[in-house]
Image (tube, rainbow, N blue to C red; front, side, top):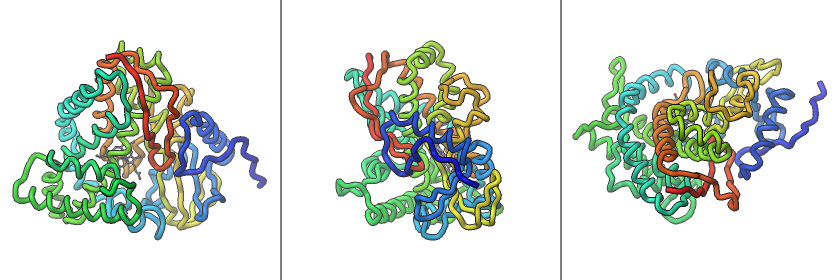
Length: 398
Ligand code: HEM
C-alpha cells in the first residue's frame, strides 16, 4: 500500500529543541497516530518501530510475553549496569527483584519523607526568595530529588558533594562524563554503595539500603551486586525524571497563568494538576522494548528481534483517550495517562515523585507571587527518553 506523505517533518530523537517547537512536535504525533500509528523508521541504521496510539502503547507495555524489556545485544542499555536491574528484566527474574524492592519501597516509607521534602524545599526557596529571580532547574528541580534520594539511601551529608557529582553525570574533571569516564564513575558508585551496604549490615538504620539488604522472599535476598545496581538505578531513574516533572510543571503553569492563579486560590487541586502535567508534558517521552516473536500490531507485521519504541508523549495526547487532549486541564477526570508507564514495570518511584511535586509546587505557588518566565531566553530541551529542560529562568515577587 502506498504510504501517505508526511505533512509535517519527522523529529529526530536524542536531539535538542526550542520548546517553542512543541506544537509542531505534537502535530507530528497527531499525524502519525492517524496515518502511521505503527511506523518503521527507515532513517535509523537499526530498524525502530515507533508506536504512537494510546491503545497500542498500552499493549506494548502490558504484553511482556511478546515485547521484552531486555536490551537487544549491542543496543542502548546493553552492557551497562542497567542491564542487570529490574527495569531491563522480564518475568520471572523481574518478579523476584520487584517483589524484594517493593518490600522496602512502601507507601509508608515514602510518606515518612514528606517532612523532609518540605524542609529541603523551604531551604531552597529561602536561598532565592529575596533575589526575585531563579533558575527553576538548578535552584529547585535538580537539588530537591537528588537530596531526597541521597537521604533515602542514607548517604551521609558529608558525601553530598560526591553524590551531587554522580547525579550530574560529572566525572570530576570539569567536563561532561563520556562513555569511558561514565564507566569509571559507575565503578566509583558501585564501590561506594558496596561500602555503605557493608556499613549498614554492621550498623542497621532506618534507611532504604538497610531495608533492601534485609528484604527477603522465600528465603531469597538481593545479592550484593543486585543491591548496588539497584541503588545506582534509583539515581538514574529517579533524578532526571523528577527534575523534569518540576521543570515541566513550571512550563505548563507559566504558559497558563489563569490556571496557575486557580491553583493559588484552590491548592487542593495540586494533586490533579501534577497528574495533568505528567500527561500534557510528560517527563519520560518514550521507552524501548524488543519483539520476542513475530507480532501483529494494529494491522502491521513486526518481525521478531526488532526494536520497538512506544511513545508515551504521543499516547498521552491521544484524543481517543483524552477528550480535548491538547488542552491543559488540571481538573481532567479520568486521567489515565501513561506518564509512569504501565503494567509490570510501572514506576516504583511514582508515589515519591508525586509527593515531591505536590509539596514543592504548592510551596512555590504559596510563597512566590507573579511567577513569570524570562521570555528573552530560549528554553532548550533534549528529546531523549527523558525530555530534559536544561535551564528555566523565572522572575517572581516574594
Ligand atoms: C516524575 C518522575 C518519574 C517518572 C515520569 C518516571 C517514569 C517511569 C516510567 C515510565 C517507568 C517504566 C519503565 C519501563 O516500563 O520500562 C519507570 C520505572 C521505574 N522507575 Fe520511575 N519515574 C519517575 C520517578 C521515579 C523515582 C523518584 C524513582 C525512585 C527513586 C523511580 C524508580 C523507578 C524504577 C526503579 C523503575 C523500574 C520499575 C520496574 O522495572 O519494575 N522513578 N519510571
